[in-house]
Length: 227
Image 1 (cartoon, one colour):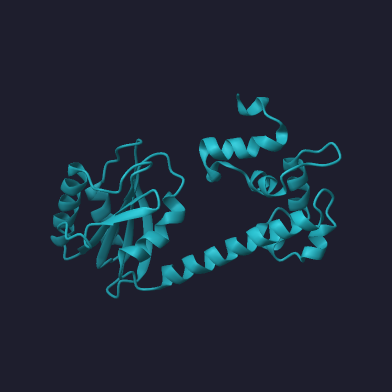
Image 2: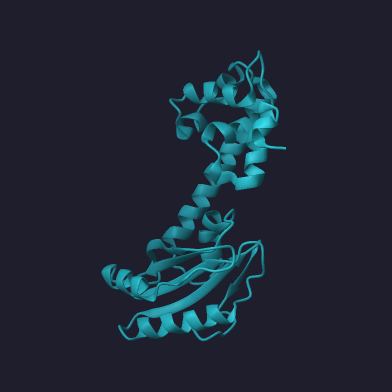
């Protein structure tokens, strides 16, 4: 069954299953929380009306009192509480990310926490680089390459150039293995060594290479894989 053949209230759910949460608009995500429409309007249309009361801005919607949400047509108490709870979880998640971003990145677990929201729903491999200063604090992060389900090229020259531009003292590679094990391939090991040696030539340290996959990670430094 195609998405267009589904009941309008079911389309955002199916779209999320097929393409991940990032493929959905704010209205479609909100429609999943709302669940069902009312008065001839489907859940997505109701969600758009709710968003219009906050000028389409989630930050204003999250500040809206539950009592006001309840008064929105098609919402009611149960749906208003669900929306408020989801927005509060999002706020707390953002606070956790902010704390990690401003902390010294001293463990692969902190790298995993920082990058999981970026890589969680990907259906292809991406390679990211974290640029750190001399105190191991994050001064930038950047996607270096994007590839297929099982492969992406780690662009050593681009990593080296960007690390020098940012005056980085330490670099951490991060890439994902979608739907598989985080165990590194021989190509991962080989590319990591190439990057490590290139950075070392200009006195920049490759601190770690973390591979993220299905709720777990592999750390080259933790497993003593040559970084």
